[in-house]
Image (cartoon, rainbow, N blue to C red; front, side):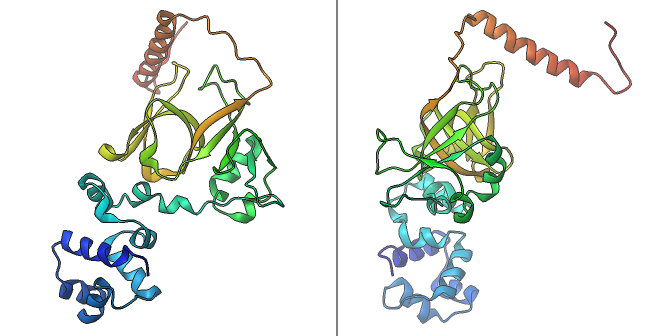
Amino acid sequence: MSQYFSSNIKLLRKRKGRTQDDVAYALEMKRSTLSGYENEVAQPGIEALISLSKYYGVSIDTLLKVNLSALGESELSQLERGYDVFITGSKLRVLATTVDNKNNENIEVVNHKASAGYRTGFADPEYIKVLPTFHMPFLSKEKKYRTFQIKGDSMLPIPDGSWVTGEFVQNWNLIRDNQPYIVLTLDDGILFKVLYNDIKTKGTLKLISLNPIYEPYEIDVKDVREVWKFVHFISNSIPEQNTRNDDLSQAVASLKKDMEKLKKQITPSQGLLF
């Protein structure tokens, strides 16, 4: 058993203000059995691990691999409120990936057509292995990369149809503010945005487009499945020169807001004459 398991379940029990008798009764096990787990004189089977994981609301991976005593109070509080996924990355560490015949990591390519399937197949090795792959000799062999084709104009001057490569992020607490990332979400699929990390304070990520006509918005981190740190992009188009000054950009953004307000004010029975 791991070096952290015993101390972790003891720490979680004490933070809940429960005795060994309380927990043992709730889990329908003998108190002496639980005491053995906490004092490293007995090792739990898979059923006991599942029961302890459900009781504390913490993944088995976290119980075994993460030293909870090393976490700050804020992180422990978030963990106890059910945000295990972004404190440890445990649900994301098992990344479906492919290697070449020399056991080097491939860079899988997710194009427009494959992006819809990727939203549900990202964790399926059978799906991942049919994606096209390539290598970039100037990228580190010690890190995992994947390339995605972006769609739309929200990240101009990076043009529609560009290929953006990202480095896999295991620990979401390391997401840096005002940096570009590729994010896989449950509802919207693959998104390429500049991020602001509000995980510790609000449990959210703020997504910002480079194109100012698009409003920033927040997503709950529980709806996120993968995060990839932007490395570079490839395009067959030269990005257009940005000739708009700040005043013009703000005017366009303001006009878009005004149009949205106007749409909300118009009832189905009303109309506009031009």
